[in-house]
View 1 (tube, rainbow, N blue to C red):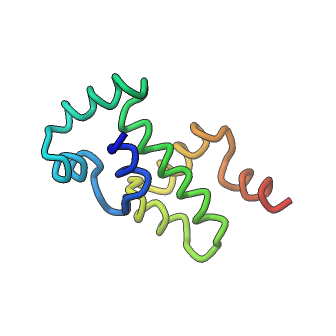
View 2: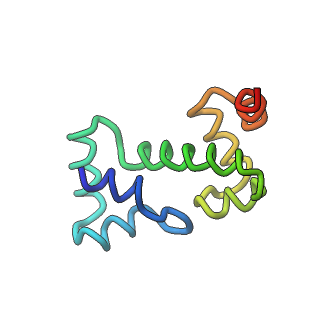
View 3: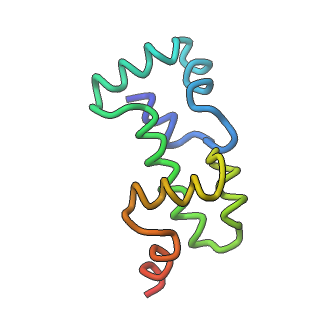
Length: 103
């Protein structure tokens, strides 16, 4: 589905997903959200969170950006918000994830 490709492949830093999709596709966000959910059984927002967490995983392993920078670039409202979303999705804290990956 094109929406998935836009979210996954696009530059999602510092952009609201609702504005990006509406502007690029020319449909209202509620319409796109209903269409996406009916085809994928998940919301655009949930998919967007999963994509951002995958990008967080990549960035924290590079060690050249702070969590504050990562949170800002990927549209998390704060570092605690990023940390909470990360744990909710992965079941691990960022520190636990880093220890696990470096073994």
